[in-house]
Length: 220
Ligand code: TTP
Image 1: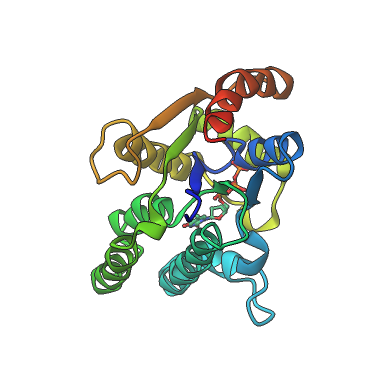
Image 2 (image 1 turned 120 degrees about the horizontal axis):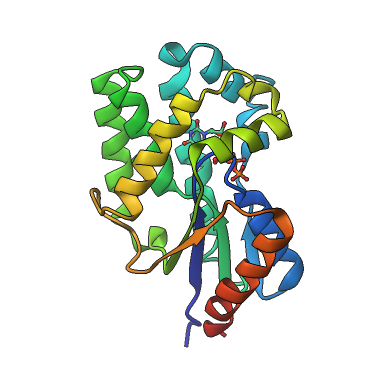
């Protein structure tokens, strides 16, 4: 009998601490988790081009190409969680869903993405998610105020994000809230766990252990 595999996905604004969360559990439960960090390195080196940087420098010109590529690389991540040799639980940093429900929506709302491009990407999204490969068992939403996220983005100093504004983080925060709390769009999981991600690193990891380890171990 095929063994049931589970997918847990970590969502939240830029700079809320998804990578630290993912790495913490990758170290804690080696072998039990298939951990997929977000493929940012692919977005910054496509055919020797930094598509993420191009998108931030000229969003009107590059946002559709960038989001199409993000969706493609995200879809690879979802598929790999279903391979015969994959561990029982996959921990995904972000998903095809947030790429569309948050980022594509926002670019369209801000009139940076053309409506025709938006509808085409949404048709691809709807086609992809009609397959249960893209279902999520649990979404962990790391919730933090945009001002806290901005401080962290500044501190990590990713070159492409040097002009990232509080306004953008506020827009993205609202879309995460609409998607995961207000259920304004369809949600790919029946279970959303909301965690306060504003504390300092050590306190956060203690909270994550207390709240998340039992969820991950439940799948064993
Ligand atoms: P995030 O996916 O938010 O990753 P992060 O590294 O900021 O996460 P954390 O700080 O919580 O560990 O964003 C990575 C970069 O990619 C960021 O500049 C936003 C951008 N991005 C888009 O523009 N569109 C997308 O669809 C996604 C998923 C990311």
